[in-house]
Image (tube, rainbow, N blue to C red; front, side, top):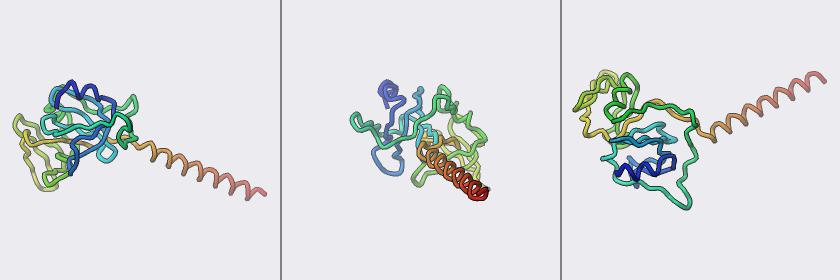
Length: 170
């Protein structure tokens, strides 16, 4: 995927790949030399290797159905190249190649030039660097709708407690 095109979409909602198990909608957070960062509602922060992406879609008129945006102070792992991101993710719980039958989950244990090592239960899995399409770790942003629901529930609970106190005092 062309870096110049990707850079023009930073901060916007985009759809990576048109359909299938690898398709995701999210906010494009950053574009680096050989990868880009997407914030998704379901998966949190996803790091995509650019050469594995078949298409990128944005809707100029309607926008895409995505209402989760990163706050200004949102911090996530960021490096110059994909391998450096992987090194920074060492000892984190990661998901490699989200969606599909080549999905791996576990603790990222080692990063080499040709492969990474993920430990899951009693298995040691070595994944060729070339075949990594995307990787994510346990970092998510809370959904605005979910925050509103929590606030409304807290207000209701507080109101109910106030009414109970008022009824007891009468």
